[in-house]
Amino acid sequence: MIEINNLVKKYGDHTAVDHLSLVVEPGKIYGFLGPNGAGKSTTMNMITGYLGATSGEIKINGHDILKEPEKAKKCIGYLPELPPLYMDMTVKEYLCFVADLKQLEKSLRRRYVEEAMETTGTTEVAGRMIRNLSKGYRQRVGFAQAILGDPEEKNTHCTIILDEPTVGLDPKQIIEIRELIRHLGEKHTVILSSHILPEISAVCDHVFIISKGKLVASDSTENLVNLMSGAQEI
Image (tube, rainbow, N blue to C red; front, side):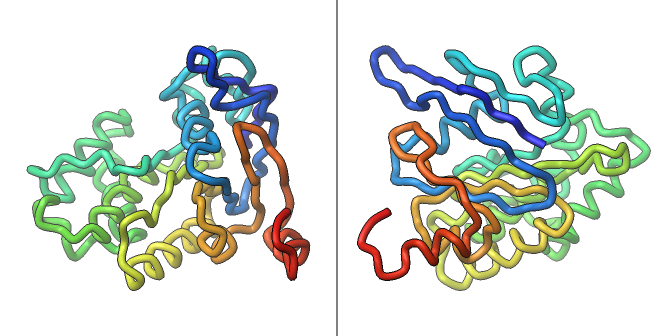
């Protein structure tokens, strides 16, 4: 699904990502766990093509993100920490706008938008201005734009990338978003980042622990929890 080989990102003398290599397989929910500044968001931004790598290789469904960016990006949906929403649009107007940006087939756009709203529970607020929505609903609209135009019909699996998806939400909204992530994981590969262990253990099948830009652990959530049982550090 996604192959990362010897990925490096430097900002002057600072190395944000240090020779990172990992493989993401289809049909699982993956967690990027690590403290703030560990390199999680930088890695995600390079996977999506938002940032260029200093060196290394990223392949998505066999497409190199640098050499075949359009083909690679059609296989992913991305929700950054701050959802890229236009506050003066209604939910439906915004999703139609995103469908246009993604150049989805015109005859299928309406269906794609309706499916995305149904999946994310935003159908009931379709006609409301985004600026009038709660933060939880805005986050759901962000999820909707990320999954819009799922290319499964073309025999291409879609990976949804979520950067700190529950930051700033109240406890009830966090539970709802976790349930939504589990639901998305039934049909998609999902990658989410967090610096909070319970956040990762609540929804993820597999965990990558990143520290100072390096991969320091990669295992199933169950195995990592068992290893940490009674330990002060890992």
